[in-house]
Length: 184
Image (tube, rainbow, N blue to C red; front, side, top):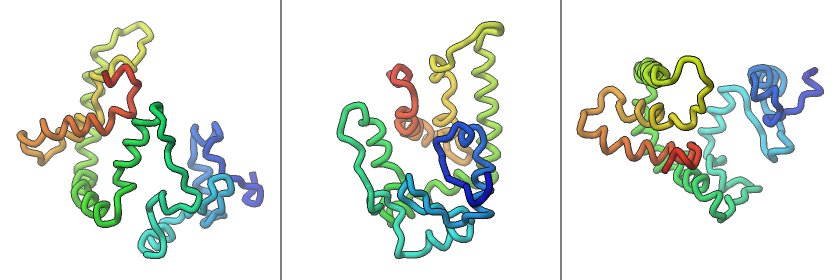
């Protein structure tokens, strides 16, 4: 593939396997790329993204997108719609800023390193529960591998009294991502 023949396709199997070459091509040859299929522009350089995010003429809201189409009001889309509508990414700017200030400490380098080690520990403990020599359907183990909720709810610096109130919220946030049987 030459830079002139490049077509951004995030649906290609090679993109799922390793998107790094695509990102490199975007940065090096197409820092502002018109993605026809997505009816959007893709900015691939950090300084361009920062400038765009700071420019009040642009919006982060997907609803401000010219071709925005709401998520269908059908039962099979209910969980996805709820997760999308209540996402920090969909919040109005004042709420988005307030929420970011609340969660930023959880993503400091020290906190991320702690979560990495804590996640490894949870994973090792869960893997110890598995049989040694047979194929296992891991979807049935979602209750024993609560990575999202356990890592967040037991984050360092949270006094013990706050953890139980955080856990149900963490489960509500991650439940739409689990198979239906795992959330019952």
